[in-house]
Length: 196
Image 1 (cartoon, rainbow, N blue to C red):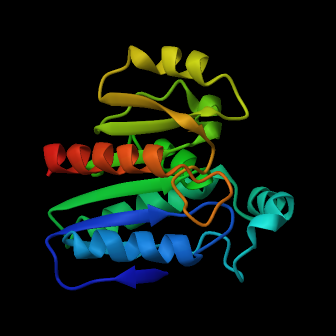
Image 2 (cartoon, one colour; image 1 turned 135 degrees about the vertical axis):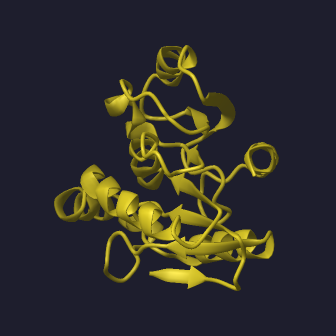
């Protein structure tokens, strides 16, 4: 587990993409630590990080070795952190966002941010117990508008569809979109401030 702690009263769990804890995820962890959170980032893939060019191999490794049932591990982590921290949030990216979404029914989670979690569509029946911010990329591998419509009527959900491609927040990625990434950061900041 990658962590950045300095006795803050609130914690955030960062859930990475299929590539592992790479430079982008480390930067995200530092960013939230500087914003006043103790940060915990489980190493979901438990191996050396993948390169972006190894996307297919990275996805297969995730599916074959962990998969989306990993949310149970994160729910255990939430319970442990709630013994120490006032509030515990999750911010997930891609597969990490889908894992985060699956934790949305955990009674001790205080808020969840899901960034381009394309497999959320497989768990659309969930009704979150905590506030959830869903940031979808308009250009993704599924019908984003349809999924957003299916989720729109549920309580505790705030949905934004960004004019970008999957992975647009990661400035190391070919899909990086500076403008939409900035909009997303503002949305996340407002969401966290509202739920602190």
